[in-house]
Length: 308
Image (tube, rainbow, N blue to C red; front, side, top):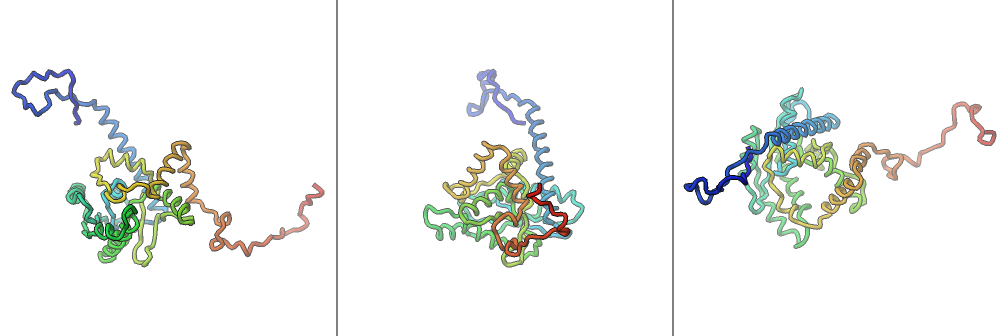
């Protein structure tokens, strides 16, 4: 129960009280606040579980007997993904294994004890990998430049290698709907390509299948749920501390769009799921050269425009 100080308490009521302690009597917060938080948490959990379940079904992400490596950074997204996957695992009609895997990249002041303690408390098998990629990134990236590119490459390589060694059939990442929207515009604005993060991907070496179970989930729902669930969120000291990143610029653009035009991001995301190659300009996806005008089966049934 959270407590707050009572402004009406007498500071001299107990002369033997510890002078360092508050002399004000606690006043319990109304149970309605706790009830509201519990209601919101359950509502968000159901929504996130429904959306995650739909994404898993739509893309056949998890199958009978799968051994899924759930990659945990310590952020809200990956911890929420683990929470939802564990919930689905308990009620799914198929059997699959979940193992939480964290890569300790030796960032300064990284709280090494938090994730092992959390994994133990929720009863999930886990593995902590340790690789000092932080020092490598610092040496390779010039001052003022972002670390994200190299950091993610090192992390991806280490995790993929471990997945192959341990026989994992799927590698689950915590990217969500807003990450996919941001990546779409990042590639469009800075790379000249119409592509984003796929919900399911075969790695370049063809040896790992990567899945993103939160593909249909909104970041605001994930953030609120992680707060209500009191997850031990660990901030990123590399990416999060750097300003003027291209991805951050895109993110701010999308946030402003949603504020000014509610529903715009939903519309864009639906568009990502309903591509019409014949109405784009990629000749490798649609055979424009072979298009031919077709004569009607019965020419006598033609309507003369002049006569009409």
